[in-house]
Length: 406
Image (cartoon, one colour):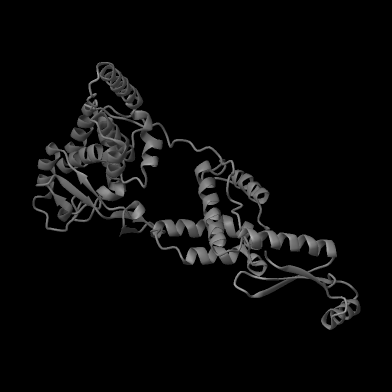
C-alpha cells in the first residue's frame, strides 16, 4: 500500500512567515495552504501539495492513494503543463506524415486548437469541455461563403486535439483522454459513387484517346488498376515491368502551400505493386516507347509529368463526348470503378485493399462492402452442403469429404 500522509503546517516556520507576509499584503491574494499532503512517487522521489483546509487535504490524499495503488498515478506538477506546450511537443515529433499533412496539422493547431486550448492546463481539460468545443467548431464559418464548417473538417480538427492528448497520456500527464467517446457530426459521402461498366470505360477512354492516344491508356489504367491521381501522374518508365505485367507505385505528387508540386512517398507510406491486365500491357509499352528510362510515363506538353489542371481539361471533354456528363463523374471516382470491376471479377477484400493502397481492410469494407452482397449467402450455401454431407456420412458410417468452394 502506498503511504500518503497529511501535515499540519501551522507551527512550521515557513508557513508562519508566509502568513505574516500575506496579512501584510492586505490579504489580496489567496492565503498559503495550512495543510500539506506528502507522498513518494513510484520512482521514490518525495512529492507534496498544499491545501487550504483539512477536508481538501483528505480528499487529495484519497485521490493520490487511489492512483498510486491502482497504477494510474500522474505527477501533479506535470499535470499542470499547458496544452500549448504539449501541442508543440507533439508537432515537433511527428515523423510519418508528409509535407502536406504536416502543413494541415500546423494550420489546425494555429487556427483552432491553440486559440481555444492553449492556456489550459492539460489536467483541467475534461470530457464536458471538449464536447462544448465540438459544438463550437460545428458553428464556425466554413471555407465557402454562407456555410458552416464541414463535418469532415470538424472531425479532423477534433482528431488532432485527441492525438495531442494521447501524447500527454503517454508522458503520464493525464490518466484518461478527454477527447474520447464523443458524438461527432455525420459526414457526407463526398457525392454518390459512380461505377462504370466495361463499355462505359471504353467509351471514356476512346474519347480521351482522341485528344492524345496515351490519355486513353491513362483512363484504362485508372479504371482497371485504381491508382490515385498523384500516383498515376508520378509513374516513371522504370517502374514498368511489363513482362511480369506489373507496375510499382512508389511515389506520388502532392501540392504544398503556394501550389508547388513535390514528389513524396505514397499515401500512408505504402508502396505497392499493381498487376496489369494483359490488354493494357501493349498500350503501356507503346506509351513508354521513345521515352528514356526514368522519365514520366504520362506527360503534359513537354516531358514533365502531366498536372491535374491539364488533365481536368482533357477529362471534361472526354466525359461529355462519351455521354457520361451529368453523373458526377470525377477522375478520382474511377477508383470506385476499379474496385467494382475487380470485385465483380472475384477479388477479395485484401486484393482490393492492396490494389487501392488502403491503410486497412476495414477501410476497404467501409467503402465497398456493399459490393459483396452475395458473400454471406454463398457462405450459407456452403454450410448447408457441408452439414448435409457430414450428416449423410454419419448415417452411413462413411467419412464426409469436405466441400470446397468453387
